[in-house]
Image (tube, rainbow, N blue to C red; front, side, top):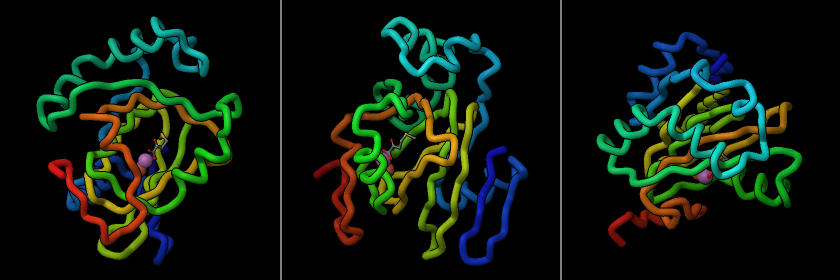
Length: 179
Ligand SMILES: CSCCC(=O)C(=O)O
Ligand SMILES: [Fe+2]
Ligand code: NI
């Protein structure tokens, strides 16, 4: 189940609408698209061919086009993190350092799960997501990412330019897309 964990109080929120409305206050988009429309092999395969990646993206064409129209994203790709990922540990080290981006961080989870701790009004709110969940961490929001004990996640990433992904570790560096 997707859930919010408020790190200071330990409070857990699992109601989807409550999750959405809390995150919405901070410009963080959470939607549940589900994965029912995908065949099992595409959901579970972590070594996708180009065609299979395209088939997954095509299955969410409507949602992706809506997001691009609303938010100005341009393209999408698939990212997978699993034991099979070369230098997984180094990647995870990078992802788990608090940072922000000049572009939104848009992840739709096709399979697996993980947590995006977000720094909202100085409090750490952990957003635990899994297959079927969409999250948009807005540009400038301080966050990081960690896998959970399942040690794998496969996401559609939607973005303007890969340059927008560059993690900015210094919270005082307010670089923006225009720079
Ligand atoms: C959920 S994909 C792994 C996390 C990630 O892509 C990132 O932090 O940039
Ligand atoms: Fe990030
Ligand atoms: Ni990131």
